[in-house]
Image 1 (cartoon, helix red, strand yellow):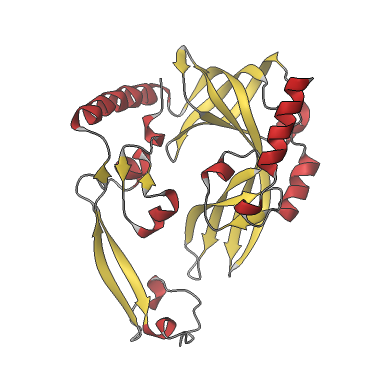
Image 2 (cartoon, helix red, strand yellow):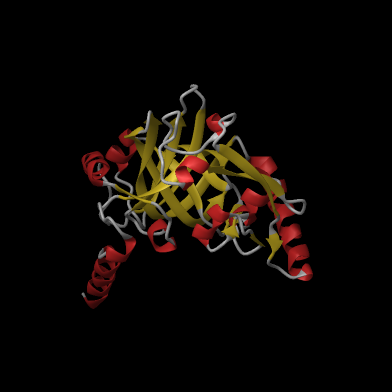
Length: 289
């Protein structure tokens, strides 16, 4: 079983924010989050005559948004975007069959407690960021483990799935990359990801002995973490790259959510990163010994 929701080779979209990902968008985003294939979706392109001239907003705002409605300097343009299919007709029919099988499986397991087995590929601190009046603060909310494959129930899940651990669990078990264990979890779907919302009854099959995170190290990384404006693929898969759930509290009290990529080593720019070289040196050293 594979998770077709996370495939990014099925659709392409020229919406401006997708340019950060080479216009590749996930199946979940197109078919579930936006439900915009094949009819497309309508976006509004905002502009401000004051900002365009380098002048300050008459209302004191720093960014263009929905609160600008009614201002004489504000205008919006309705734009229709339509995802393009990147597969042949035959490939798309095969994909639809795989998607139907996965959704049948998901309906049976979603929001239920399941038994599973996995080998840990990576584990990262799980941070949450709350932004209020343009000031943001990071909070440690436990850890996220990443399994490249495993068994969920009796299903051979040959794809990545995820799980949450509390800070107490990680301090107790010291779960590390390469560890294999059986456990129970509450299976949910998180933006297209198969996720164990809670994990318990952990029974280790093997322990790798690899270095792993402690709460003290995670709290130090929170202080030095740096935000990347873009989300390079190499940083997303790096052990020191962490996607942070961001909750923005608006002036009217409403809340919006998004994700931002942080480097937990405090590296300012991806092209200045030395971690990839360090990891390769460690890998070579292990094999020489």
